[in-house]
Length: 494
Image (cartoon, helix red, strand yellow):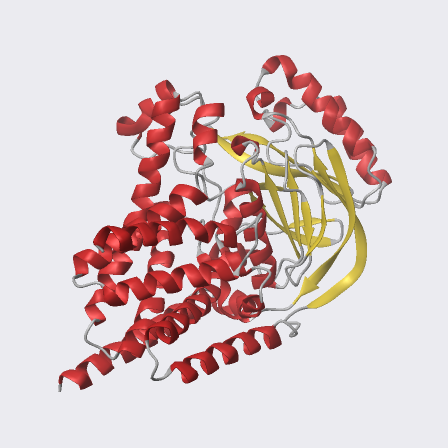
């Protein structure tokens, strides 16, 4: 029975991936987590519960982030066996968080069953998700709330953010697990589940922000430069000419190029190219955002700079860097990993300021974030409510044909939902997309195709509750749920 339960937990974790993009079967994670909660409720010891949590996490992360192998082996030049081992070990490390959740929920084993399964387990699950997204620079990928970017539960996102959606989904899982395991109280659990779903659907109809100014034309450029040649000096001129050609076709007021579209220092970009692109942007009465590298005071930055009609010299520098991909922690200990094992250009960058003013371009106040940064909702809101538009520039070519880029785009949908702002994503190989202020995808380019996405955008003003309070409400709600569970434990003992 022990091995059967562990295998069931592993399969349930792996099944969760079908709830995320590109599959989008959002009820699956709710059912999978309900399965885990039911298994936890039957575990005899804290160690057994931790083991079940570990196997669930190994299934979830081993399947859901398997694309890391592509980055390490196909583009990082790591050997097949070492890349496979590194990917497995990373998934196993992340599974330790779900193991911790299993152990902690067992502390409430003597509370009433409905309290434990509908309050304690969901609260602890999301608390551990938040912890995983915070410590060691954070890795919030596959936070279960993201699977609901298109579900009725998305209505909770402007209030409590991605973790709040996770909490509501986890409570739904707890109610399902309780209804599955117990006859007495089953009707009440199903009724509570229905109320949560109806409330979520109703919240989707609330417009937390309002449009400002007139709609304007945008162009998102997808250069489709293969990662294995992106930093090859012999093809640099071809890359620059590709983007020159695509930009010159655009009549848009705001044109956005992907992350490091120009894979060189900003001050090394040919001046005649800059002048040609600037003149074209001015002819359109607008601006162009370009991804490149910057250097200042001996530091190198992953940056976006603007040229065109608006004030010159505006730039954004990436703040939240990818560990081991863009900066090396404890360089004396781990420096060899980048220098001798992995082939990652610009693998030790300087960090931009945490709070940077939005770029005043195309008549908007644009909050730019680069690649991985848009998976941290609590950081995106630092530019709000001043920003009227969100722009993400990304290069997910590192992950080939895997579903990493679709997962990433789905997380951008959550940022639009949380902030009540449109999100424009310009990427190298996809997913290049225009997302409405309600989180719905309005337009999208096919992946791995050189093209320009022409569309219409609009600025928005106002504050959602999440913009105003961040993750504080969901953390307070978690504390309240655990406090109630603890109180019921105390009353039962007395």
